[in-house]
Length: 265
Image 1 (tube, rainbow, N blue to C red):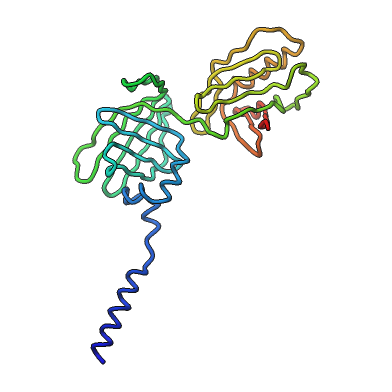
Image 2: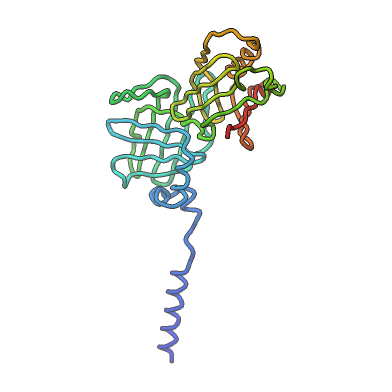
């Protein structure tokens, strides 16, 4: 009887140990970088990437998401994803610093605006990236240099028709051809459009929560509604941020809403 009780107790102990739920906190928090890089949470987060950087000698890559950063290299077993703390932005320059660490990994990197070349391709980069990485028992950080770009919000992609300008509804009768609007190419950070009389185009400057229309140009036809066209172009040039709500694009700056556009069907 005593032997049977011991066997039964051992079986119950084994069952309890194997049924104990896995700690979700470890997978999400990033304390174990290798487990995080492989779990479903990290895979889902890769859809939220807003900045990508890469470097050579050695090859490496960084992807920044809403609250985490993923580091990649040819040695895939060294890849990891970690949560980062609140980024620090310099007061006198467009420089932002990030830091992420676990028990075995410490990653620090800065993003600085400025034209950058990877030395291996014709790709255009608008930011220099300097990273420092320390693993395990390493005494010193390993310095890495590379280039990167912000990824324009995919929600901005497509055609947008002007509905409001400087707080006033657009009257279709004011425009002989068609309503003014823009078409945004998020992948190439460019836009084209119709200002109300003339065609127009330019580039997008995008960072997280920042949107600017730069290098704006128009053709040079004269029209009866040219004043409204100039006002629309000025609204684009003065935009500093944006919001998207229910298929409407709000172009904003510290003074308020400059224009409201609706997504074309």
